[in-house]
Image 1 (cartoon, rainbow, N blue to C red):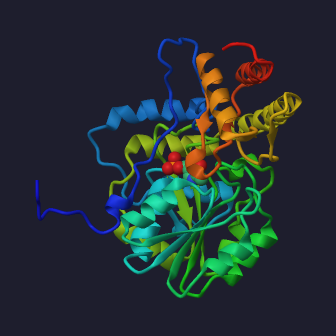
Image 2: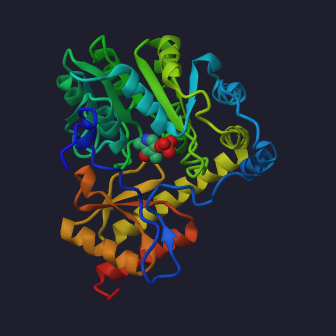
Length: 363
Ligand SMILES: *Cc1c(COP(=O)(O)O)cnc(C)c1O
């Protein structure tokens, strides 16, 4: 068919996002460790708030998200007027690209960076520019060298996915100070809560006018299925993003659940401390079986194998035993598998299976 109906430039360059698998044909007792979900689920208070919201499904939700923004602001000590909420932090990333980047503009991200940066940049018609990392760690000098007069956005996740590594506050500050004056630095803080005492660069957002941070309810809050995230930045930038935000982008159920979730400190603390404990245990257990990993600051471990072939064989072996992890060849990490830190029994199952795989036991 020849057609005059064609999509905007950049759209056909997008390879559709591939999510973590959740099924294995013929295997019943499945543990999904492929999407960095909280193994303890969402807070009971959040589930209850979501159920209660069902009573008012005929009502349109709030358009300004004032109550959720107030709850976020109170929890983090932020100015509620500088918070914007979205359907996942993915939507905030999307708003930033739509509002600040278009044809001829460049959007920087790093070698093993989250795939949504590239997808959203391309969707906006901008040029995604990939910058090298150094041994799976973000390289500030390489990013600064990669900036041009066309750079409009620089995305980093800190801690990063899928590497789990992070860079220190001084390095982030050096990056913010060094990017060109027409560019915004976006600090994606999807895993910030897993780092005890780390504010995800909130101080930088306060002290500078070119930094935006994003956060999500999908990871430690265990609400990935509901799709809620938020951004925080200079008032002028948040005002711009709000102009392209749909007035009812968050439903009443999303708003209610997120508000309850952020007030449940006990669930947050439990999720964080169990992750810290089990992450260390799992990394050690894998190392004992000869599978190395970088020190992870998030809720997953990037397990390194000798080759792509061995990583794929390990993935097949785990899958046959009902353990679904993530291949990350698409993130230029072909000899690695990303394994979410599950609950204790899942971690034990993974460690045991890797031990058997390494010992040459048939799956
Ligand atoms: C999981 C993840 C997100 C969260 O996306 P949501 O749209 O909020 O679910 C954002 N950034 C990174 C790097 C992630 O790994």
